[in-house]
Length: 197
Image (cartoon, rainbow, N blue to C red):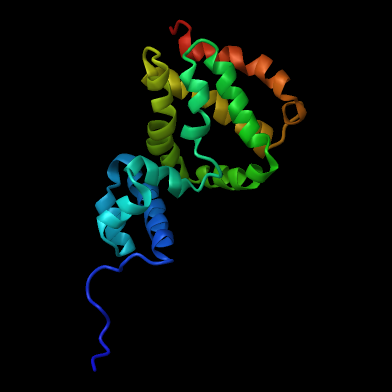
């Protein structure tokens, strides 16, 4: 009776999903979104590329899963986007605030933001999150120049995250949703549909 280990790639098992996610996080952090391939992630995880597709679908889906967000931003923003560009700044901001103000989401999101401030995390935001989540929002809204406009939107949202939730700077930290919407939504809407210099 042979006691040799089986040859070939590891089949799917309870730890396979975790191994794929760990490999994906490492790949996205070092190679960026565009430099990461499903094959490279599969090779690092010791599985077949088909198994990565089985668990996660597309590379975009794998990227979002690797971020370990408590919600999929593409899903929660869907209804706000479907109504078109008029008023989208306010609708999107209300969704964003509702997710961040939910106590069940706050700690995981804060952990993610702290990680994104590290050098490898910065690449995930720049090369991944903007391309996979933020960019497609502009395309789905049908705005002109989404590649120019959506990073401007992201600058407002990321700034609000850092000041309100991470640093807890007053008065932003204790403002109500309506107060924040009154202040920020017009600027976000201008970035979405207003004239750009």
